[in-house]
Image: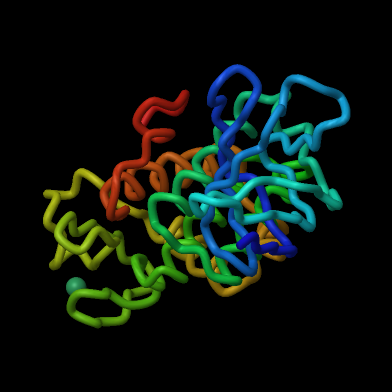
Length: 243
Ligand SMILES: [Zn+2]
């Protein structure tokens, strides 16, 4: 028997299957992570289009063989401008990758992901990437709070340079460092990450930081993410960013 579902969702990934159909990976509020076939996505102007990063109220139906298909969308935002800019598109692909690979599909993940896509349209890409990674890892219980060492629980000194533990995949105090000082976090960068985490994703966009400092923190977050994340992130390994 057929079943329907209607609710908020966003397109994390879109792959072409067969001549005219696409397989969408949605992050859906009612269903979590779900694969949905969009039939005839290229064939007719009458069919329902769901480009990558589209957020809206999606109407789906479950047909025989337990396969969801797309019936209709009330679009909230297409996030169209993310597709026109390589850097923004790479950032959004990384966010999709983290949600899909991390299988973190709760309402907090939805709010973080769609919030980050909205911010990418207006704010500096590196700022959004830094804040998304910090918030995502914290929500998933994978990152430290940048206030105390997650390994020995000692509060960091004001001017302490942090090391990294590739065992736990987190920034740690210099005594708990397992990487011989090859991935360090200077005190001003640590304070910036701590403040980022104490603010909402949107409010953290207002933190003042020089473009050079921001770029260094951005590089640090990408390098540490590749060590922290429990799963391979193809967009990081094959993306445009040098780690
Ligand atoms: Zn420690």
